[in-house]
Image (cartoon, rainbow, N blue to C red; front, side, top):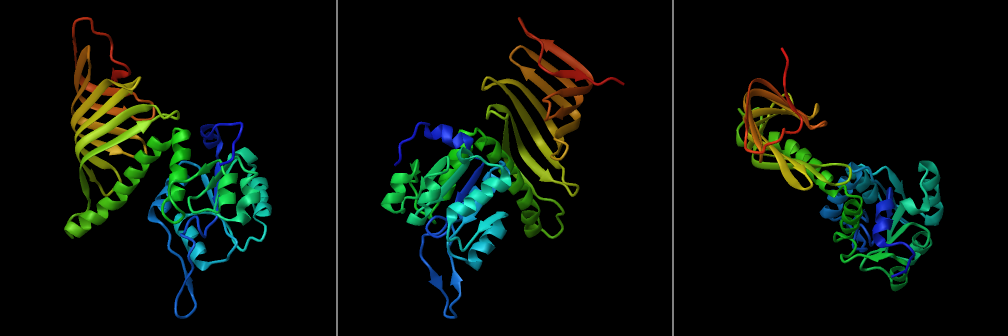
Length: 319
């Protein structure tokens, strides 16, 4: 591998756009043809999930291939990849066009390659990656060589490294799980019963981190049921608020309604707020996930234990 003045972690943190070759990187490099002469390729599912998560985190993804292929075009369309450059006789020239169009600096670009034709790009970008099955010369030019081979999760490996270095991995995982859950729930429910209009999932847990990757809260519960209006009915919900990676306050309610669009949860039933020094109970509450504030509606009662201090961010709603 190539030595450099900057650490691998610092290179990963700077990446805003990750470009990659297709044959030998997104695939195992083998070419398959039908009896009619049509070409088809085998892509890795884990790579696909990784690309989806990267784009959800704001990382731009691009395919740069020396060979034109309908399979590559289809794969890019399925994943929502907008930068698709094929039949590239000069990959460096195309990468320069991407830089100019989007205003990237060299250090903000990453490239994953396997063949000699990728060398000019690898020697220029801020993060040069060679897959495990790459040519020896390519490996020597790289800042990092993947543990996994092309077409077998190598792209996913690199994407995870970038997102973790940028402290966005936990947040992406939380959002990805929520999206997958909400997409799956109606399908699972319809399969279970034609009369069910909504679906549900049991024993859920969703964390939320800040922009630095620090855990803010975890939302747990026994059951989450998706309603027709897109909101979720949560049973035995429990929100744990964190400070310095420790639980500072717990909000619990037998039932509440979560609005994922407005980023708030509300209940008209009993609710309890608790920290090591104090317990607050009431009827009805609204939790704003964006600000972290909790507002109790009525019948607020406070029990302060010896040496107790005020709970952070709660108040009774005024009539």
